[in-house]
Length: 211
Ligand code: URA
Ligand code: SF4
Image 1 (cartoon, helix red, strand yellow):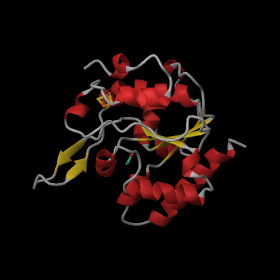
Image 2: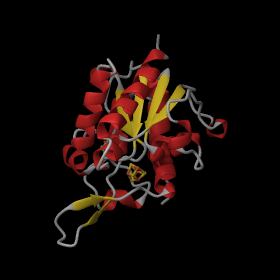
Image 3: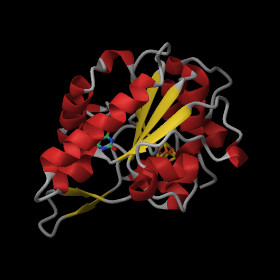
């Protein structure tokens, strides 16, 4: 599979992009997953959030961040004073990658491989071109490494104002803030409240760059 590039339409209209992405076969993930989960939100958004990939519920709904991680994200956005309806929300990878549990019933999230992230990245770049956000938030390492390079570490640089790897020659050059993924907070056994506060702080920082 040569990646998503060949499936891109000439249009930069978000609806046209989403319609084309529905037929993407740029990597193997489409074979096992449900529909392509394209980004959602207004083309006029000044803030764009990038997650990792759709989860089980997003795969069923065809919409990003509508499951447990989405609910936590909604809470964090609200605490940060950001209206979800004002932001464009998407993922680095647009199909759900999973493994079956031993019983074969539950679908367990699997981290996408770097090759899958790169295969899918033309869709993210097209969304950047369509939305031209002023500020972009990477939720977790997968999104951050897609834009900031494979050696990027959230623990070292979270909350800082960054710019994408210049070698990517992005269609726009938003200020980037990387932070933890809401799913990582949900997986924590202790310290969730503090982790949520840190996520909220990073989101506030990102929103303050719009002023
Ligand atoms: N996790 C993500 O990264 N994206 C989603 O859409 C849902 C869960
Ligand atoms: Fe295409 Fe991305 Fe889905 Fe792979 S994950 S088939 S590149 S939309």
